[in-house]
Structures are given as C-alpha cells and as structure tokens.
Picture 1 (cartoon, one colour):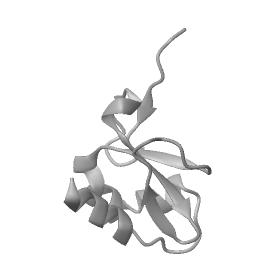
Picture 2 (cartoon, rainbow, N blue to C red):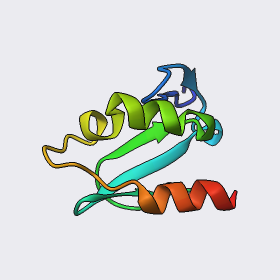
Picture 3 (cartoon, rainbow, N blue to C red):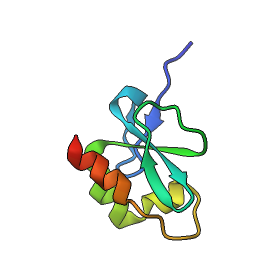
Length: 81
C-alpha cells in the first residue's frame, strides 16, 4: 500500500502528513489539529506557509467556507511552536 501524501494549501508542495499541520474549520474558526484526530473537513499546511495561505485566502477555499474564517487560534498555536 502506498504511503499517504497530502498537499500544502499554500505552496501546493506534496508531503508526508507528518511534515504538515492539519487544520479544521470549527464554526468560523481555523483550529490546529496536530494529532490529526478532529472530525470534519481538514486542510494541510506547512507551518512556514501560514502567511502565504492567509494572504491567498487558502483557508476559505480549502475548507469550503463562504464566511471569513478567523485564524487567531492557529496563529497563537504556531507562535508557541
């Protein structure tokens, strides 16, 4: 069986999921899911690609949201890392 490969929503580079951070949409917020366990639609992101994803609107597109999503919790999580 082939290993899982995911794409970063900002740079589109394909990686093993261990190299990427999974994020999910909860109501109108983007929440980090470092354990890859939260339910719902997820998106994958290199930790260094956050700014690019935010500028390009990648979160709304990848998480299929019509409303603006808050990335505050994700930003706090990435700053603590």
